[in-house]
Length: 144
Image 1: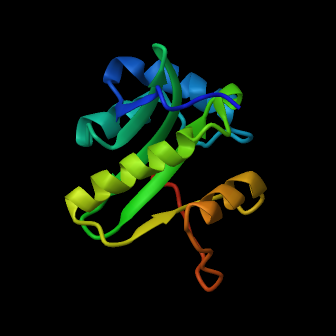
Image 2: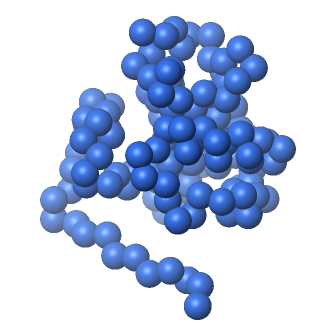
Image 3: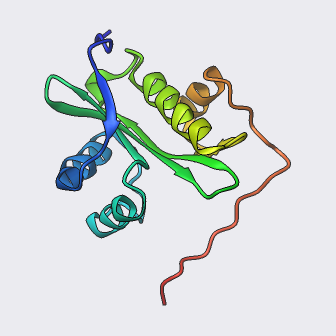
């Protein structure tokens, strides 16, 4: 197990967009349709603190998007480099994200997880998130 205690958690910088996308590609089993540089730049321009990264020895090894809409907090795109997993980095990112959300006024946080991502479901359960079986998520692209 790799050690994570030396990792620092901080807000991402616009010049790190390519490195973040590369981290996501290495960490995700299925890339998201929204994994693109323009989308990340828009996020960082709108809310510079929304994308947290874990940095260890000068390398980006983890990230999470911490969204706040004024009503509810959300976690998106939690990713940890495969060779750095099971060392507490994801938990450290979530703790930093929750601190940010509390500071903004959030009293409830949700996360969206693909139903077939068993390791992700186990992680979120382990950090205290409960499945809401009575809720469904509906989506529609805004383009076109």
